Amino acid sequence: MSAGRILIADDTAASLSLLSDLLEPQGYEILEVSDGRAAIDLTHRAKPDLVLLDVVMPRSDGFTVCRALKADPETSDIPVIFITSRQSSEDIVRGFRLGAVDYILKPFHAEEVITRVATHLKLSRMTRELIERNTELEEEITRREAAESARDKAAERLSNLASSEAKRWGISGFVGSSPHLRRILSDIGKLHQFGKTSVLITGESGTGKELVARAIHHQSPRAGGPFIAVNCVAIPGELAESLFFGHSKGAFTGATSDRKGYLELADGGTLFLDEIGDMPATLQGKLLRVLEDGEVTPVGSNKPRHVDVRVVSATNADLPDKMAGGGFRQDLFFRLARFTVRTPPLRERREDLPLLAAHFLEVFSWEMGMTAPPLAPDALELLRVYPFPGNIRELKNVMERALILSGGKAVSRQHLQLIQETAVPAEITKSAQPPSHLPLNLDAAEQVLIQRALEQTAGNVAEAARLLGVSRSRIYRRFPHLSV
Amino acid sequence: MPQELATRLTMAAELHSATVLKNCLTDVEALGPAGERLARHLREFLSSYDMKTIQRLVAQIPAA
Image 1 (cartoon, rainbow over the protein chains, first blue to last red):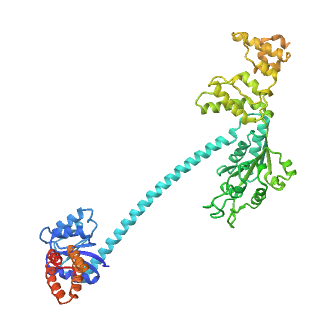
Image 2 (tube, chains in turn purple, blue; image 1 turned 30 degrees about the horizontal axis):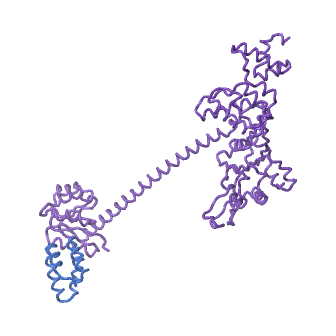
Image 3 (cartoon, each protein chain N blue to C red; image 1 turned 90 degrees about the horizontal axis):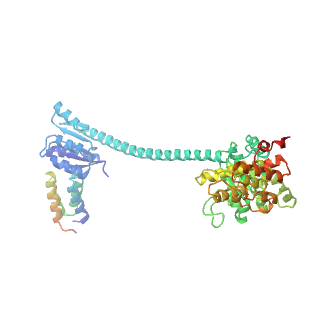
């Protein structure tokens, strides 16, 4: 392999031969032409690393050749050295202005030519490498800018998502003003400082245990971390260990790659174990060990990994009863129930019912793109006495169905389809029947309704006011004698 | 003349590569007395930069 390819253009055979004999022993491949046009043509075809140009040549002089080579992007980077006997300053300056890198005067010294050629070849190679490296760097910068832009967008989306999640699941998501709810909110507030304390939430189905769990997460310093919700009932026994602790590739048939378990996925955040009372006994012991050690070992691996997880669990089962029967480990119970929150059934916080019903109407109306309709007094009266065995979840379903049935108009009793209608006291059902004989005049109708309410409550004004959904003063204004 | 040598000679002449041509002519000389005569002949054209004639002559030589 040659040290470089050099094109020599000179119409003097002796000069060409001299230069060739000088440079060939240095390891260069020499291309020879004796006129200007041939020099241009060969430079395009052979792409030499350097061109040595005589100035005076037939068919295009050296200056014309240099101008042509520098004007063409394909040959403009090839260094050109003039080697001539024309010594005038004008010619020298002209040569450099046309883009030549050097100007050697004849008669030349052999060492001078060898050194200058070697220097310009080296400079040319370094320049080329610099340009290539610069291009690579520019491409790398473009790739990095695109990656940074994508990362910024993802971070922005994540931030928006996190704030909307916090807004959705934080304390502001709770509706009501009952003492029960205030106590729950107070408990969540107290837990804020204790981000590692395990919490057990107990309560009937549909009382909002997951809502409380999410609020605990979003009100804690772990809010920026993940919230992983797992329903222990839905986990197949044979996969439980892999799902909780993860597995390494090849641990069992079908384990084609490493996979993180719930505990690792929740690292830095909260693991919510719903229906903890139904966790398989074999898994209980292993979970306890992980919670005690703070380390998880994936199935098929012998390398434990440290995890920082707060466990919030929930159950509607009677865990002390289960422990007595041997269905739940006592040590795990005490590990999980460092702090306990009870979510009361809806029947114990009926004062929150109007707010909750209105809230659900508003939420579903917004989802359906309509204005939230009002809840008629007869509907509210029925809701107040209904036992709601399915708790808030049942109320939510009832309100969604009622909104659809009402078609966006005021939701009245007839739109409520309650599962256990028989549980509603008969007198309420009777009084709530549409009064066909009511006068159409609003003032007169109010008079009739108050009278009927008073009859039904044996003259108890407070109870009648509750049934009507009005204040007692309104009844007293109608029947002043009652206040005596 | 071997085909490979003929090809090298033709390409060198096309690119006016005096260096490669000289190397090729050394190889041609090594082919024997006929080769020596041919090399001497081609060197005359090389010294006058007549690459086209070199190409034409090489093309006329039957491949070995």
